[in-house]
Image (tube, rainbow, N blue to C red; front, side):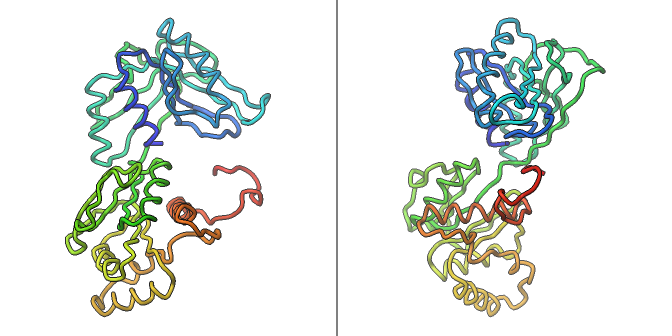
Amino acid sequence: MTHELKNIIQQYQQRKHEQAVLATVVALDGSSYRRPGVRMLIFENGDMVGAVSGGCVEKEVLRQAQAVFSNGVSRIMIYDGRYRLGCEGILYILLEVFEPSESFITQFWKTIEKRESLFMSSYYKKELSDHKDYHTVFRFNDKMFPVSERKVANNPELLIFEQELDPCFQLIIIGAEHDAVQLCKFASMTGWEVTVVANPREEKTENDFPGIHKLVLVEPEAFSPELDDQTAVMVMTHSFVKDLQYVISLKEQRGAYIGLLGPFKRREKLFQELFERHPDISEDFLESIHGPAGMDIGAETPQEISISILSEILSVVNKKEPSLLKHKLGKIHT
C-alpha cells in the first residue's frame, strides 16, 4: 500500500491548487477485494487516484465525496456489497478534505527516503454519518501531522483505525540485459521500487529501464549493498564470473530474497567456486539463495519468466506456499 500512498501524494503535489478528498477504508464486515487501510484521492473535477476496490465501489465514493467538497465536513459512507455483484462485504469508508501542510509533505518524503515505516490513525464512527471530528493523522518522528489543517476536537466516542505501513518493497536487479529490462518493467508495475545495478562499461541509462527508480553503475568488487527485510535481489548478469562476484558481495547480507538466474548445474558450479574462495561461507546464506529463480509455471519468454520470478518473490516474502485458489476453502486473505 505504501506505493499507492506515494502516488497519491505525488499527484496531489502536482495539483495542490485543486480541492481534493481522501477516501480511506477504515473497517470491513465480511470479505472485499481490498482490505482496510487502502486509500484513494478524488479531485473536484472527478479525477481519481488509486482505488479502494476492484472497481465496483469507486463511482459511489465519487458521488458521496461531493458532499465533502460542498461543506468540508468529513463523512463515513457505507458500501454494502452483499446486494451487488462483486464484493460481498460491507465497507466503511472515511471521506475527508485532503489539504496537507508543506511540513507534512516534507516529512512524508523524508520518511520514504529513509525507508522507515509510516504510521497513521483515522478517527470515525462505524455508522453512516457526517462529523467534523472525523479525521486522519500521520505520525512522523513522534509528531502528529493531520491530512488537513481544519480544526478537530478530541472525541473519546470515536473509534480509531490504526495502521503501520512498511517501506516500499525494493527489488535490486543485478544485470542489464533484455530480461532485466522486462523484470524491471513488471516489478515497477507491481509498485516496487526497482534499482538496476550495471557495469559502467555497459553504457546504460535510466531510459533503458521502464519504471526504474534508480540506476547504479558499479564494478562488482565495489558493490556494497545494504539490504533490509523489504528488499529482494535478483542476480542475472548472464556472466558466470560477474554473478559470482556479485554473490560474494552479498554474502554478509540478509534481505527478503536473493535469486539467481540460470539452471541447477550452473548454481552448483557457482556454489563450488564460492566455497573454494570462501570456505567459511555461511550455510544459511547459501540456503537463502533461490536458484534457479522463479516458479515452475511453464514460463518461456522474458515476460513470462519475469512473472515467474515475481511470483516466487511474493510467495517467499508473504510466507505462502503457492497453490490454486480454486482449491482453497474459506477466505482468500488470512
